[in-house]
Image 1 (cartoon, rainbow, N blue to C red):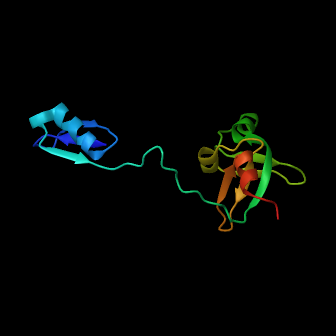
Image 2: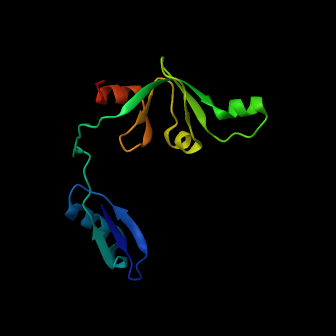
Length: 137
C-alpha cells in the first residue's frame, strides 16, 4: 500500500498493488506533480498465514446452564440493578455472582464456560473453543 502527500503534508490519496513499483507507478500516474512525498509500506498479504499457538494453561472452569441478570431480581425487589448476574452451573455446583464489568466484557451465555485462571482472572469461553482447547484433569 502507498500514500501520496502534497508539499504541506496533506494526504492526497492511496493506492494498492502487488509490488512496490506497481504502487509507485499508480500514485505517480494519479497525483503527478501534486505529490511531493510518496510513502510505500509493506503489508501482510492475505496469503500469509498467522502464527499458530497451542494452549498449555491449567484453569478452573464450570459449564454454565443459565444466566440470571440482576435486572430481573432488582425488578422483583423494587430496586435499581447493579448490572451483575448469577451464573447457574451444572450440578452439583451452585450459582456464581459476577459483576457488571464481567458481564459487559464477557457476555456469558448458557452452554459456555465460566473460567478462572491461576492468577484469579475470571473469563468466559464459548463451549466449542473451550472443549477444543482443554481436557479435564
